[in-house]
Image 1 (cartoon, helix red, strand yellow):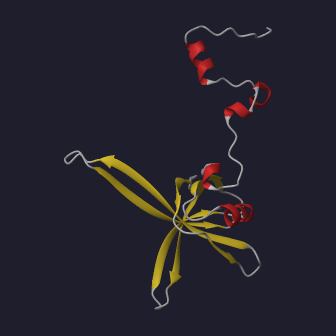
Image 2 (tube, rainbow, N blue to C red):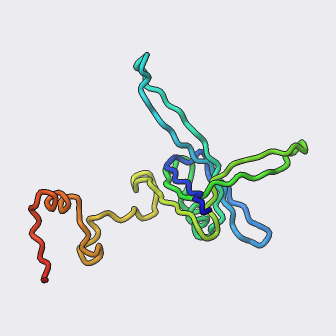
Image 3 (cartoon, one colour):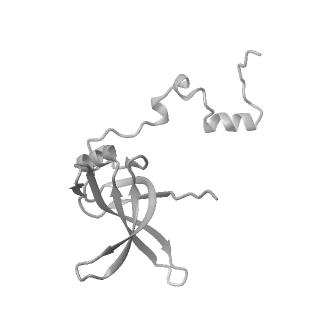
Length: 159
């Protein structure tokens, strides 16, 4: 039976990333990411908020370099990884478990969502305006879809 272990998060970094080196010299980055949800309480009408903290570990060397150079406390990130639980022994000799989002050596993704105005010098992601029909393969836009739905599409198919 096949399975899927994929975590997608958008949140803010709680403190500057911690960069370590493994015994063989590879970078390992640890950071905490806060995700929040807000809602309006039905009885009081007041706005409520709940924040969840996630431990993130980055083993992917390219992503570790990006995190080291561009990610800092308060940075807004989109990240993709997998969920892993591991057992460890604490300072008192007690066995404990922790669950982490892991961006492994061959998977994972980070997108920096901060604007350039917040001091992030990483280039912003490309937008649809940055491409023409040759680079998008002539893909439908939402406006094209609406025109086609209304039977109003003047296609130029040569056959």
